[in-house]
Length: 421
Image (spheres, rainbow, N blue to C red):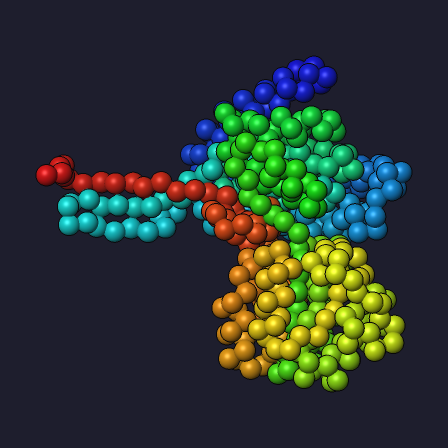
């Protein structure tokens, strides 16, 4: 490795090595990738104590840095969370290999037989904040899809990410795969991010995973294509036809299970006809659970609410805070979501199928849920083993980005000597 003070040289070498590894991964047999991921999971289990020790150093750094409670929660590892990392690695290992899958196949009258086949993207750069488990998820998903990956974790998760990365490399080594397939940028220097965003010769796509500031920076400065993951401004609309028991259970889970994740509910929209029944009960339950409800003028009549301001509509709190508003009907809720949403995840609680159909057809978010907690907005819960992020754009990938979404495709065309007249 080059002198660590020469960031451009360091990143150039990382890019060169990643590109060489990607060329080999493109035709690596599925069983070798599975072997690498299983061995990485074994390494995570074997090195739990070292990972926790590294995480303790990061937590101390985070406290000194004054990180918010939500950020500290994202940063924290425990025995249970390390077990989840191991489980995620095994789940990805067990998935069908997407590389080489025939997506479509057809014959033409001109004698051509055409297949559209999945292929790796090449080299993926992942830039993320706080959550050290992203190191494992991103590394594993990219490997499964036949891609090399360059990981740049946040400065606050520096030690945890390195400990987890060591386990991934141990897995690669056990399977006889190039260790350069999964590389971790070995510096906290922000100049490394700037370099990574400009590496058009060696990097095929950038995936940012973090807050609005990080994503905006990446979109503004990147010359490499980007899978956008903007804020999770998640809405739940409670229709007049909603079941009271379902509504209470779903809203409470969507807001309070984990407030610091991108699928946490941030805004509650209540049909006017449900205000005095379901609406009152849900808002009071949220307040009793310690959630600060920032309410519109109508809902301020409920004791314990706080007056909302215009800034509360379209805000991602990632905390025990929720904006709440009364709407006239589903169309009013849809209009609010279109104005203030981030195209991440939005939900309707209703029993009227006509209203459900109207909502799901008109809300154009990456994930639209019906009578389900928005905390399920997660690639693992979707059966992808894990995710590299939730893409909110519309090009190439949208929603949870798993191994399949980390592939492109090519056309294989065959004939028995066909010529064009």
